[in-house]
Image (cartoon, rainbow over all chains, first blue to last red; front, side):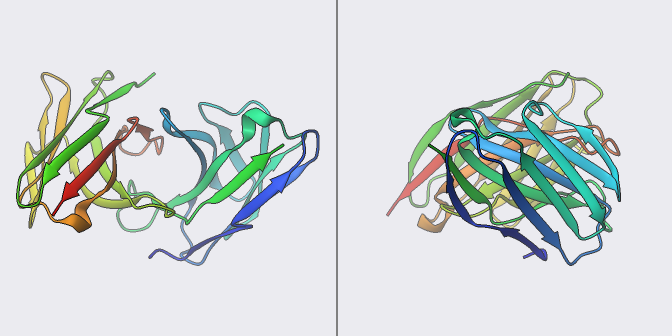
Length: 113
Length: 112
């Protein structure tokens, strides 16, 4: 497995509370991504980063923000969680020798009550 | 933007049979097509990928074919085994642009 960890792995929170998910990599890859996975939708890109402090929006970025202050860490923040953000969140990395290939972390299951 | 459609959504086969999953894409500029396998409770894992400069690629029991003219690509699994049971995702992107667009997934069930 690529050296990617996500924390927490499971979280239950209430509507309106802030939530931060963390992705940590040990591969020194340039690119990092956050996806959400929902039944019937596959994986959809939320935000991605192409370097420290360099980020861009994906397909479903509303309600989410990201930060990358170090190569190895990429944070996803839900400023005020809503029930529609209940999902499984995956972090991915790319930028090694096979630059296009994305490697995924184990996921975080988030439930917003 | 790119749109990827994947069929079927579920596929049941007997052990030893072949399985085929098909995807179509909309953006003719896409030139990188990976396939991922996702087991229950785990993240997607790359199993094979193909670029638009080749029409077919094989890796043991797995093969992928690409038809650029028709804008579709397929995953072929031969001699299926129960451990092939999982959800499979296709994806497409433009090489170097780092944005993968995924299909909605196919749940493959291989019965002994």
